[in-house]
Length: 132
Length: 116
Image (cartoon, rainbow over all chains, first blue to last red; front, side):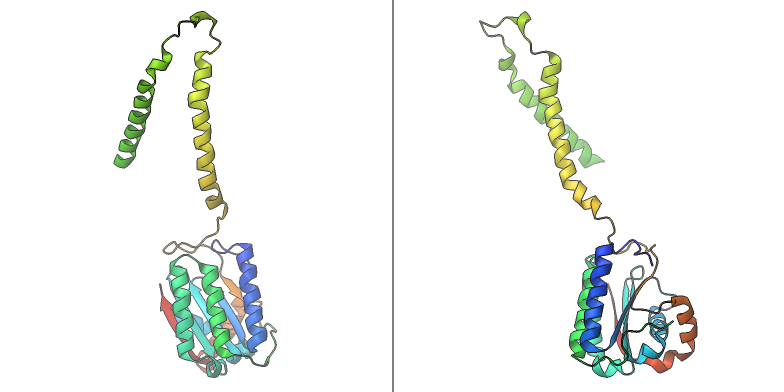
């Protein structure tokens, strides 16, 4: 996967590290998608979450659409118990304000950390095996 | 264009005034022999035009080089023309999106969104 024109390699590596940290701390999957939405961003974010397959209930999915200037956070059925909608709204707002300043990597990192902090420590339910 | 023109005019006037103010310096000293001068027009040009130009160039480079070196940067409002990036997503995104399409309602527990 090419980093596109918005994140350099160092930033991609940073986001990866932060996501790994968040996952090992919370036991939830923290998936982040950056790219254009196919249709409505909210519906697309839900499709992205569903695409995680058996991991979806244990996942929070952040979908960032730089062109539409929109960030969508969707939580799986189990993850929603740990990360409620207010925590999602806070993370989304925080990310949006970073993005507005042109800081894509910083926004993602802060958002994921907020979500993970809110979820609190937990056991890895599924590990981080990828589906697909 | 207009501010650029007035700026150029200001720079030209300022340098001309400085040059004119320095005209007494061009007057010949009693002991100075005009023909023995090893200071040619080219030397003067090099020292008083070449060096400032070089200095300006170096400063401009120092100001703009680091900025253009950190190329990949998101700017709000610009179209996104990169490939989608999916951190911790499925290894084959297209196939996973297709197979996950049927179960959209079942997986969603909550969420939020924001615009910027």
